[in-house]
Image (cartoon, rainbow, N blue to C red; front, top):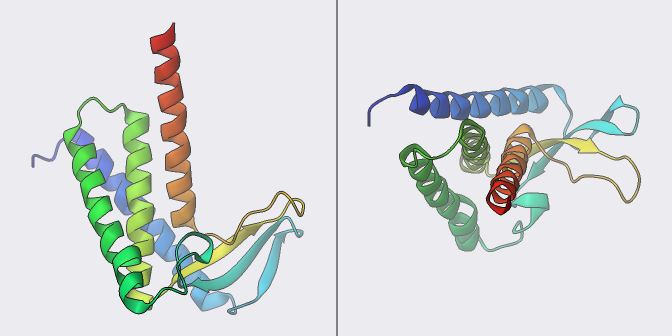
Length: 165
């Protein structure tokens, strides 16, 4: 694989995503007492320290250890590998899509690393606007994956709109 400007962009985005996420988790583990909540912006935006031994919103946390290993470690690594291969090989992807995929890959790797290294993922951000409008507790890797998915949907809708016109 030749290191082109495009490939460097993909790899730098992945590495920065992982780095920012891991630094934030180190700081939270060190400075925020587990199980506590600190308001950042009133009750609307809070900092917490919660260990999630499942996947999104704790799903799969009660699986037996073998299934957990397969579904939360092995399968994500395989999928992330295939996505990375696709992104590097598909030269038709625009820069926004490259950034989106790289953000998803970086966020995915960061959370898989946590599961491998610590047996759980550190989540620490919580948004509570009303009882109906609120998030689960999440981290920067989750934010990267979600942002990447939103960008991909927007890009897909833009492409679809162009083909309809």
